[in-house]
Length: 252
Image 1 (cartoon, helix red, strand yellow):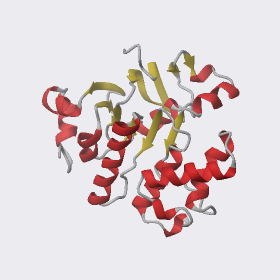
Image 2 (image 1 turned 30 degrees about the vertical axis):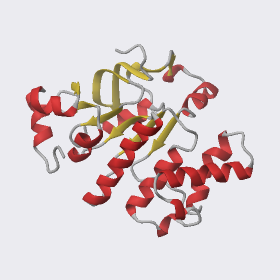
Image 3 (image 1 turned 180 degrees about the horizontal axis):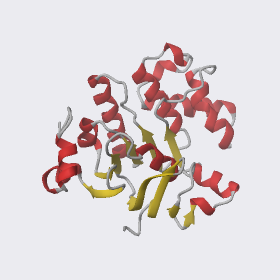
């Protein structure tokens, strides 16, 4: 594993309600890369993401941010570490009673030492960065599905985290909106140097944005491949190649 890794999973095993989902996971997240977590439904992609941000504790193994084991960190240390993470959950999870601007300002108000004017300026900048310049005073209910996803990404980026976690950002979106969201994700990596962990089952997104892809095998209950998506399509294990060529989308 790279010594420069931002985050490392070592011998990690995951379970839900006492059922083992994945075991013996070993991988890292590197600076400036987009790592896709892929696999069939129920393989544990979203569960793995929750472990990577310290929301769930592993059955065994560990997740390291630097030299800190997230499962052993106290609340103060875990809060400090999480300020380095930006997280967009699958639904977007915007507060419906707040304007879009207030949603993006929330982490800044809670964790940044800025006055009100500076907080608003940063929030407006983050919204502009995701193409929502005019949405600051809008309510989430007035936004389209794609706009809600972009607003959630703006909120996740509010504190300039070095690591961004996106859970199914393209779920439920039409192909054009999904492609625009892929472009946004690549731009965040290219222009801000943000490292991104992307949970997705959308093959078009995997091929369009991922530097590396980690395949979680639901049957074997472990990772069976980790490499560039096109290399996996050409030379990966048969189950991985079948997955990558077996759905609509594919390379674009």
